[in-house]
Image (cartoon, rainbow, N blue to C red; front, side, top):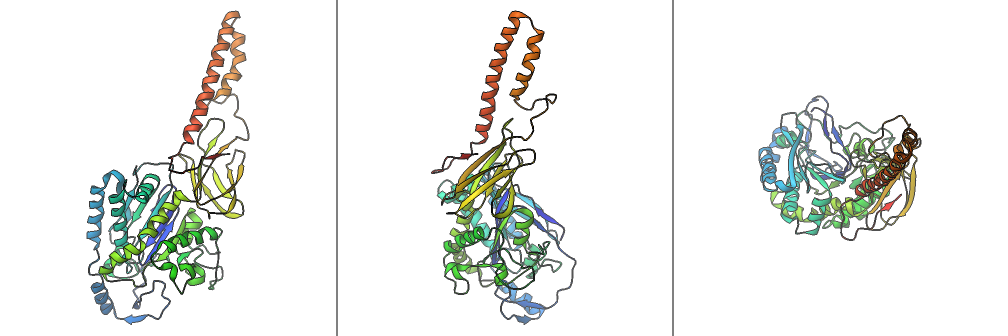
Length: 465
């Protein structure tokens, strides 16, 4: 497979479904290697292959899985369902492709938002399904999720919150070739969740997925507390995931459970600043299609609550320059957590997942500007923290003013007065004072307009630093 990049602005969270879910924050990439032969074919219920596998011949394997696949959408049926959804829900959705599989099947993505296709100062969330070809549950659940949001928008509070405040991107099948052949890998026998560039140093299942010495033990990433919070949010909203006897609370660190390397969630976190979980939603790769409605009901609230957490928890805000009120694509860091995110280039908005009930020192920084920080106590609801940064060095006099440069009037006032005699100079002074006052009002209005995000019920007043 060619390099595939899911290039989504400010992608904050994502969830990968098959028998497995992923959720994450940023840009996702995919690289495949050359065909290396099919080797032994096996079938097993557990996605991470922790149990003894039964061996089948190729013919037995395909025959078995073809029977299991009865009732699931084919690739053609999935494409038809996606396009039908877009026709039915065009006011809050758009469909686009991020490329093709090895065999030329389009990789369709559904975007759901109140302004689909338009950039807004909002976080984004991606769902990815069917990364492994022989784990098809996610294909079905993601179409059910999209249709539920369409049917319940402006009727159910969670649907309305998500559509109005999040850009949700749904990729039902990342591996249509593997699904068609009923095999785990793609058409080149590549496991797509082992084919990302590995982090090297380095269920619900959260990072890290691999350790530095390739041994099995708990290996925490810088945002370990937040990952545990997000994983618990999903598990506790599920019908019975939190009751697991194998995993306390229904969550686990990936490296402690079963280390893997070249996986999607570690790559997303390191290279894209994207928070991602891998969630095992079925202990059977191919449950009977009649069980899909039950699996949907078991996972529906978990899926919805996880997406909604982007705007209901953590911190968010925007960053501006104090001289012209222009947006700044500055960096946001949390003291004590070795992980930095960047604000968006257009709206200078940032969205940072953090664990509720903790104290944090938030720092905004950008080359050429003085850094600013503030301490917050994060409650159960999201906090808005906006920053206005001051330039380190003032602009030179001979540079053209940008936007409304009030200081340029002051610097030229004296020169103009010297050129005009008597009464004319007095009139000019009055005009200049009026212009300065108007410029001040415009500058203040620009910053205030930028700092006016969508308001939600119960939202606290933003903190401006």
